[in-house]
Length: 74
Image 1: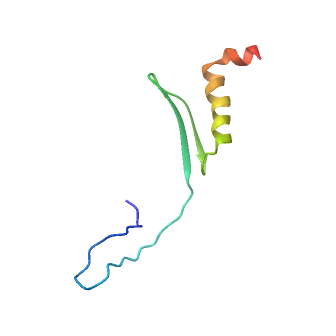
Image 2: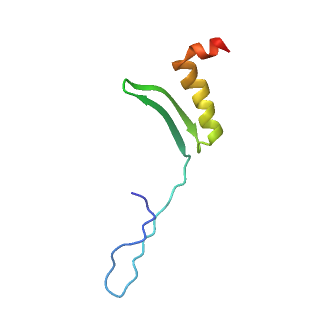
Image 3: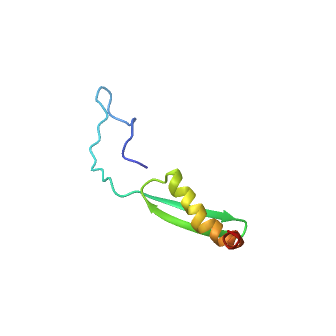
């Protein structure tokens, strides 16, 4: 649950108020590649994943590990 609730309970005639300390920490993104056999590749990135980061992940970790013959042919 998050501390940013819009609804709550209070006695009749009073406003619902809550004061809490909110910590804005680092955010991480996890990129797993799942198959029927399990996870074959993964990466943990600090911050959000952009399309460039996702394509780089696919090229460097997924395609190079799963299809190594493609890199030999190039």
